[in-house]
Image (cartoon, rainbow, N blue to C red; front, side):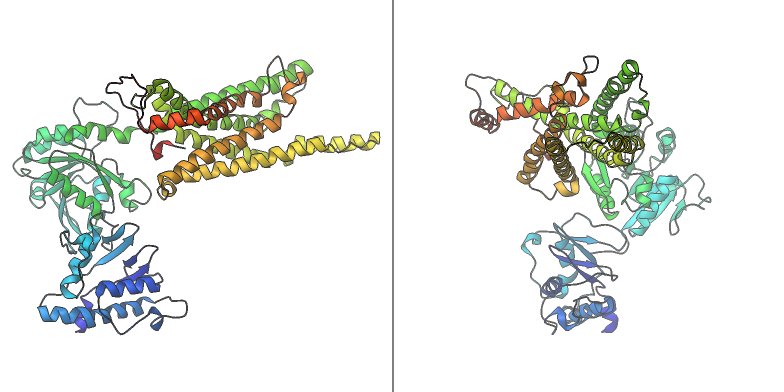
Length: 603
């Protein structure tokens, strides 16, 4: 009996917010919920009615205690049923619970996406009196095998070695195909090295981890590759380097094989680090559904997610993805660079050059701190307003067109798609403004001017009176700036995928729209109160140039004025009707459609 138990499930229960966690026996507390769920899954009664009977006051169970509990449950419930049915003991299984259900996993990889209840019940239902859950009644019963199968890799470079190591850890047998089978010093232990012809005969799935320039040797292997699944992982050095994609070229060389493009967006470093420090998404395309499914199963066993991009015709697009450098950030960064350059040059002329020419005063030291501390908030405020200006323009266009079934101009589409990036850059510049402001009291010229002012008052035996209005002004714009930056941080936090995925559409819209406009109001008020009545003073206009904060307030004030107009009841009601499908009578809009902005396009 004991030997049979040792072959059974060896797990530790981990409690979570929404379910039961079963993991390898190393570490985490168990609560009453997970205990009861374990007993419900296995079925029957073990004689232990609560977790408190086997744990301390803090309800923390050591590994050995919990494994003993599971063994007891197996002995009392599973083994008797197994003996009665004369069925072999099940394979060891490790299960991880997530937000969307139980996920099967092995000790070396991340959860897979298949329905995990079916796999769990596939291991224990035949041996326990447990009804099958309705959600998996029609699911295929699957069991965990220690060996997943054999995978062949052509190529012993960095990616091939990293992929081979991960496959070995996931339970696969790995065979490398090499021109020199004797040279295996750098290959992972446990793998085999053969010639290309011999290696191709050992596996159904073959990863082609060589560059396109070396594909010619595959033509001599055409008989051995007949009916095989070839996974092309190659990338090019630049876009449009070849008239035909690498995967399509490979398919033309070996017409009898099923070519799948994939794994080219995952780096060797991502595989070595367990896909924790880089992208975990594998983009796949191919013409054979069964071949793609075989690659999907391998990717899932490695803890990677997959996305089907269609037929092999999409291979060129997939191959271009690793060559892209921040495609959604280009326009925001260009706008940011232009605004920073403009305001920096403007302030050099307004603050530094004017004082040097008119008064002979050398203020060039302000370039290091004072000038950037004016540039960053000015640009940040303009960028924040630019996040909400395209939404107002889109509403005006829909009012003008009388329908939502008409495409926005391309420039407006592109603008709306990069609003999140515009907002994040604005937040970064606002953070720099905060940091520069914090060092303001310890700057030499500030300390010097303060000391000089005090000494001057002592010598002249005068006291500068307290200005109540000035105190109100400074406290007001400090307070509005702090609150504005706080709400700005909330907007940035909710833009993170890990946070936004927890919100429904209404919550996300409330934060990004209502809270976003509140942030814009606070930051605009911060600038207006800072300027106070200085806007009208002639001494503040140098060479007929207004202060920089005056310029930075133009776009935010325009956006807020447009918003005030659009939220008036008559206009807002009409916009709402249009967005719900209403069209102006007499309009014939053909087949054009509007590009809708989803959560990912918001700040």
